Length: 301
Picture 1 (cartoon, one colour):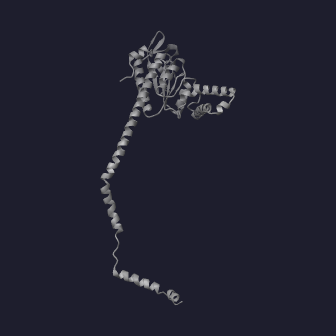
Picture 2: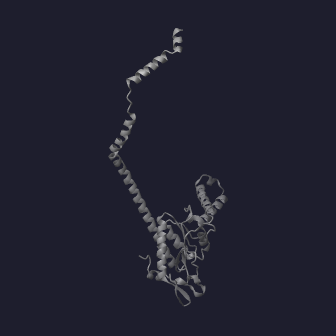
Picture 3: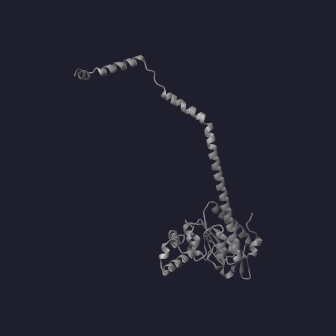
């Protein structure tokens, strides 16, 4: 079942592309027609591409991995931050910090620095600082929060990148491509779809278009998280049932196990029969030992 329909996309203005003079020839397969000098996107292909991207998003979330959303456009910031925060996925709505993916350890150090500042403010040493020092540290903390606050929980590289405008976020796209991270992108008629793993041909300027497509992706992630939780609960129930059945099985098989273990033990512990001749030989040996020359000399002394 499609996640969107033609009417929803039409109402959101997803079909509006850029002017003809600004188009990218690589977007020709996704263009339906030209009207009043503006390219019109083929919404039937958009529906198919949205479904493919949503299915992939769902599998990523179900596997426990994370998707990083990138939207630094003014009309997309609030929409993305509000929708994505509901599923607890990381997002970047301010300026993309160069090297965030390719130089990820450095970014993690900045995040740890932000955390250390938070601990400092709760410590008694904070009160001993001067007003100027407190002001400088607070400004540094606010700057880090603005740039890295949404990715504070991102402890490793994301499994995928979702980009609102592939032209504006070209640095992020380039870093993801260099590291082999799949890229989901809303691609307009003026953009180059080459290198984008999941192309969603749509209007990347209208806020309604951005909200509709992003909400579909977020809903797919929510479904994947719910299925992951259900599978985890089911596995826990199976483990509990196995633990309950294990003592019963041991009681039933206890008799058979005892029989198997007793037989070889009895064979190993059976003593050999001792003949009278052996006893006499041992007695003679004892007498010889007692009547040795050394013993006789000791007795005479």
